Length: 88
Image (cartoon, rainbow, N blue to C red; front, top):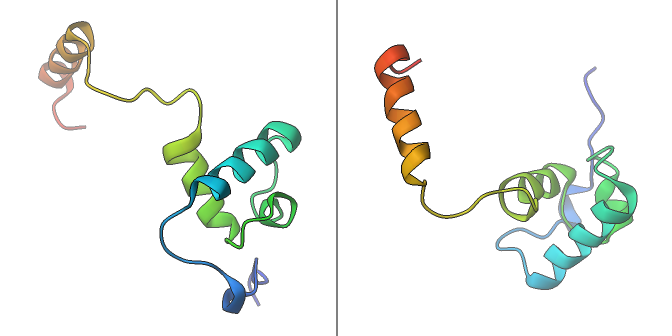
């Protein structure tokens, strides 16, 4: 029972992503949209599992991710909300 395996674990690459793999993933997502992450590695070409592709896109490659330090206004908002809500 349960879900069928998404990929053949023997032929998967592990470890750091190369810039070429990143580029393949970005191009594939721009062309086909995010859609089904389990089928994306077959379309994109990297020898990675769908979960690895999803995490790489979500945490590093997505164009709307803001990197860097918080602005003064953002920091003040965080402090104000923390004083109102606590650690929720």
